[in-house]
Image (cartoon, rainbow, N blue to C red; front, side, top):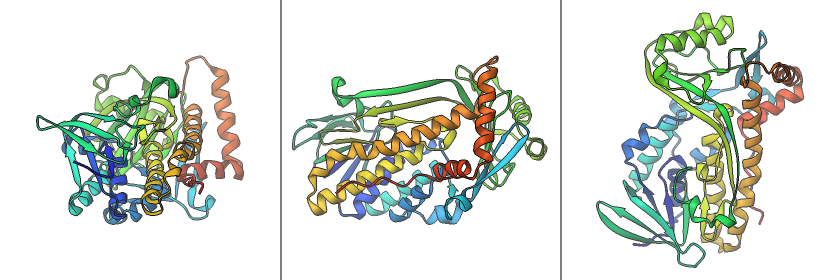
Length: 395
């Protein structure tokens, strides 16, 4: 079989790239090693940047998001007895974020792909790109017990940190940068009304806490725990009690508790692989970079890669600009590193890293006090939170 772009991975980045390419008349096939049900069962991010929302609209998959997503014009940072609202809309000239779960984004994209009859192979195992430095790359995979070969012009590696795509780059040609944090987030989802209309990030002497939501009736809460912690060690009652200790008094008093419908621990890490392109293969999303979740950037950063890859393929196929592929990695990495910086800053400033590091605790307070009492500081937080502009390919 043959296609123009072979996409490995049917997460939101792979599906969105496929949708945009199809609308531009560029044939593509998606290979996903998991089942569609498994992909939809993954509970992930829920805060979409302005640019992500705009690109989903451009892809024609925004109907449900526009109907059910929750636009947020700000969020709160609580620390040292203060609760400061970051006025996103006022500080960025009208921009905001939208709370809409990654699961819903994925479902919308799956439905759109099915509606146009584009080809996706779920439970396609052993996918392996070949001949990436030639003019005729291809991907082999196994589907329903039979081996297949997919010839293509280009490969898009959207298969995550543990996928095969990044490993196709010779070790001597790739450099990785990584920082692991000795902390994790214990997250609980519950069918309870959110404690506030906007998100709350709390810096507390007992550790970080966060209040988020997926809808007006479904809440998502997090507390900082050691990265070795197991969710099995936490009953619902213990979680709610600890969350209340870390929230501002008014929020703790308003908190509605209930049975959890999901409970998990997510480790925190920063990771970047350079370059994000090898021959005729591009890396997108977690295949190339990971950010700690504190800044709500993981999904959004993947979508910015999609924006660049889509614009690149559009120019290749409609303007014959094959030379632009060499600029993909540099273009993406400009935004990647700025986003890594913001996610690192939010993580470093809001979490407790040691029981006896009074110096760091005082630096955190000074940092937060400085940023939240300065219009320039507030604007910096707001501009990064709503999402920096997508980088454009230099033509």
